[in-house]
Length: 282
Image (cartoon, rainbow, N blue to C red; front, side):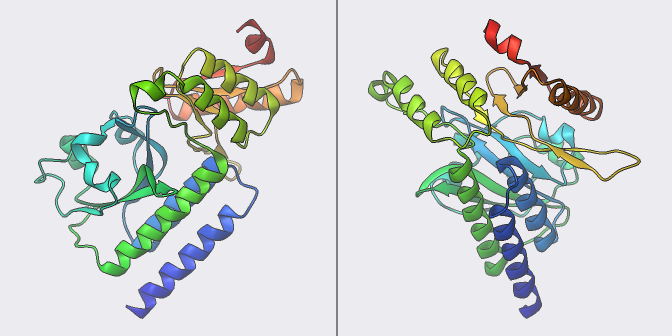
């Protein structure tokens, strides 16, 4: 038990150092789920975030899961994780037996037996979940639950600092003021370049939901170490990633290379490279 707690403390320390580094928000979340999975000794781990309407969940960062499983579709928040979003921990000892589990057939194909899910919060408001997936039947201990909950809190820190999501008001009255609310959130987002903020404002004007730097993809090469590629935007309603660039030839070539490689490794991912001239046309 003492050895396990020591491992959890080391993992949390590693995650905290990564959060305090110059990695992008997507890279920090990717490191968090990878480190959490290793510490728990499970098949994989993922962070899923609520969409703007707070009805569905999509994967923002994942480790140890196949692309087919990640692309299985949105999770309906009110069907499977309503209690988690209210602050509770949800443990499923056997995915095939729990009637509240969505996509049970795919989980069986992925060899997922047990899961544990905890909320990810920002200022006490649930914005998503952190889930661990086990290939063997497990009853997670209080220490394991506490570790995953602390990791979820650190994920909330990443999301708050990077503003990697957009929250729309739920009431009809507040929804009429959504443009002002969204514009205020854009001003506080930690965009890497002014053109990204401009693009976010265009999306807000047309009332298109967006998430900034939501997910990192690993690009593998035979003759060099793998690198992470984090597209600038994800548009949930279109299931489309957007990578922006400038007119600098060197940057354009590099981003074209990454987008091409992503298409080779993840053929089901929809991504568009948006050059400055494309943005000007918009």
